[in-house]
Amino acid sequence: MEDINYKSNSYIQLQVVLLGDAGVGKTYILNQYVRGQQPRNNLPTIGIEFATKTVTLQDGGKIQVQIWDTAGQERYRAITTNHFRGAGGALLVYDITKEKTFENLTRWMEELKTAANKDVVMYLVGNKTDLVERQNNSRKVTREEGQQFAGENGLFFEETSAYRGTNIAQCFEKLIEEMYKKKNLLVTQQQQQEWNAQLKVIEAPMCSKC
Ligand SMILES: Nc1nc2c(ncn2[C@@H]2O[C@H](COP(=O)(O)OP(=O)(O)OP(=O)(O)O)[C@@H](O)[C@H]2O)c(=O)[nH]1
Ligand SMILES: [Mg+2]
Image (cartoon, rainbow, N blue to C red; front, side, top):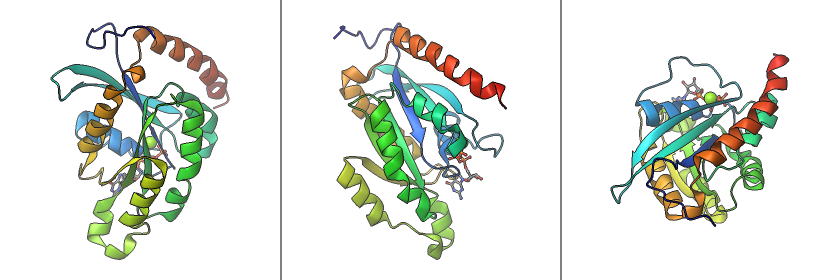
């Protein structure tokens, strides 16, 4: 493998993808982490959006992280799964008040594993803890069930509230440190550009139908 000087500016990058059913809070999670606030609007994501953030690592180094926020809606599936390619890390998100979003995790995980880097680091995130704090009977997936799924599939696990910002930064920080330990997950700018160029070709026909 090419010897990557991972602290040089000419190399980005870690690439993280957010995936999971529509409405689980992926875009809220991204905005909390990158901007410390809620998104400007409440609209479902169309296709893919991304943000970058420079992160300071525990060893003092800095690294740029590119985070892809994918649409959960079925009709964007072909586009979104294409963006799993190359991802070295993933937040697999479900809504702890909606059982179906938990049941669908297996499918998301399989699609991710098929496309992403073989060493992809995955974090299971059960979002919307604030709803349960307000109304205990709104919980439909127990913490233990989440933990068990994570344990069986080798995922890190946390419950979050993207509304309140609870545990969001911790999830990303842990994920990024784990990815950083596996140096083969670092992506060069050249690799990134090649992937992006290919992705545009795929996206164009979809948009022309809109
Ligand atoms: N109570 C509560 N609501 C949340 C939380 N996170 C997101 N929401 C709400 O859930 C809805 C969907 O959030 P999004 O972040 O747009 O969901 P998404 O996963 O990006 O959905 P798609 O883009 O369609 O895949 C919004 O109405 C948010 O207000 C949370 O932590 N707590
Ligand atoms: Mg979204």
